Length: 192
Image (cartoon, rainbow, N blue to C red; front, side, top):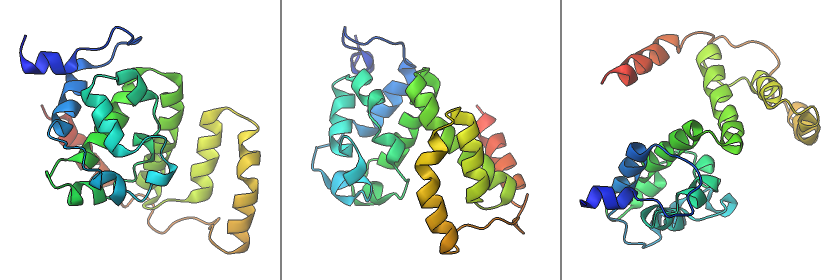
């Protein structure tokens, strides 16, 4: 058994099938992690995460796949690249977070599908409008979530933002401008 095969072996408690190849690639990204914690200390979203990035890397290397995928840490990564820039080993930690999001989105867990809906709606909104139109984004997100009570949770925040002029109800002059950029990215991602 080579090193790569050992790295992706799952503990007996693993209850779901994951993309073993994708998981091995993520483990390779963080294999040289020396647990210094610079990534966690650099992350502006770490206080909101249920696990620190450092502990997430360790859990990945220990094969605790279920625990990693049930965490919301990687969903809260805003891809600011602070962790990647400050990592003393130069590990691609932001890429690892993005790869975890992709792995979780294809994993089939209901919770991950729901978490991924916001990102899907966000990207569709940016592609369509050339920028984020918050009101349209939240409307589509609420419809996708199929929870009639969810908008009530956001009503105070929405009203506060409207009063301060932070939400625009009109259209965007940038509509469709990013379409060619998104098309090029899709073309590049489709290449083998």
